[in-house]
Image (cartoon, rainbow, N blue to C red; front, side, top):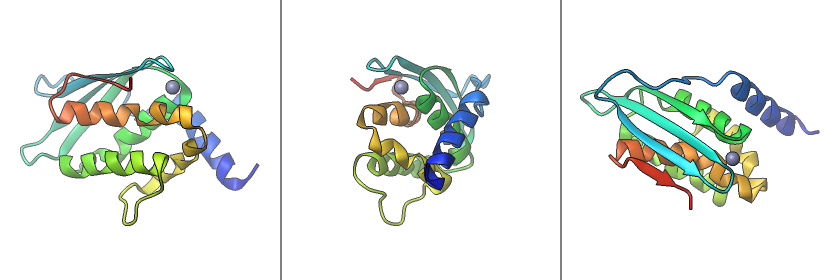
Amino acid sequence: MSDYNELYQQVILEHNKKPRNFKLLDDPEAKKAVGKNPLCGDHYYVSVALDEAGNVEDVGFQGDGCAISKASASMMTQAVKGKPKEDVLKMRDEFHQMLTQALPEGHHLGRLTILQGVKEFPVRVKCATLAWHTLAAAIEGEAEVSTE
Ligand code: ZN
């Protein structure tokens, strides 16, 4: 196994075992959405609190699904904390592009590029992007998103 494959496996296993920000926010002002990927059975709630300037103050997720969907959601919550919502929406586009085309030039994905191995498994792309679409829906005021 190559070093990259090993890292990819390790990161997914580790986030799956100990997902970060695995909670829903108490904040009544928090924006919430639910995301479903019926093909795989992934099902997540994402809640996000924005400060007055529109930066992500706190974010959490709950739900269930395959290892890739959960690891991706966990890594997403770490990556977007403190970021302006516009940047989060841009990251969602970049992440989707990374898995369906190629890593865009000048991207803002940082450590999330570890997940680009998902590109080799097209049926898993929807698993990996589900949390991102759910977070974007919450930010944009939509209550529900489905990959189908
Ligand atoms: Zn899945």
